[in-house]
Image (cartoon, rainbow, N blue to C red; front, side):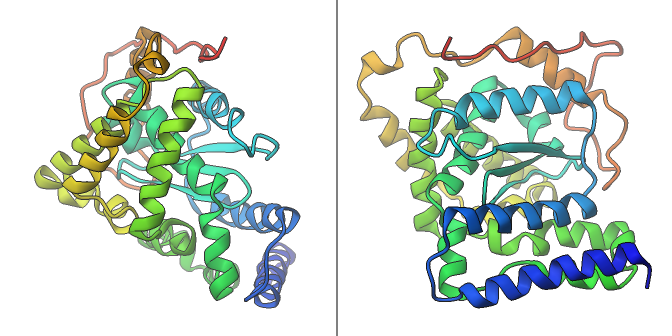
Length: 295
């Protein structure tokens, strides 16, 4: 075994031992950061990530505009775009947020992507995955260890499986947790000066996609229970907001549409070669930075 694989195996093994010792005990914020850092390192080593700075900078700036206005603004928030056209997003403890390229390509407005980021940020703020670990002591270190000790993870099929199974303990939330993250997402985006209407709007897009191309959104529905009643519940939250709090909130920008066009025009995803969600212009304008919604 090479020194690199031994080091990765040791890191995964230490993470497993750390969690085993934490089962049934409260996990501190420092421990949460350590767990998140270790698992993000393993995830980033296995999943194909978009490295184009125009894409990563946009998502990071939009995500930080939301995360830095939450009660856990002190976390070292990190945002990543997975190079896959399947629709999915998930969060890792400690402030690591992942969104698939395919989800971005299916958004119709800036507030829809902001709603997804606000939802995943909500899971971290509410410590949903941490609470799962406190109860069960289970994380994905076992899968990471298998990858470190074998060549399994070099195949696209295995990498696709890891994208669901490898993050299962972080992505599979109960309906109660999903509802709580939806409610928190509304507050998160409003504080950032963004309209919360994109949250139920994106849900409707995903349900329509499930009817038309179920294979493309299977990962999302496996980890995010979603039915029409959840859309209605989110709309009721919006209806209960003070109308004055919604005045002047941004829902969309031309800059965002240039950004999505740029993402669609990137080379085919490395994880799969599924049909594009939409036609891309031959020479789209490069997206600019995200203006701070709260400025």
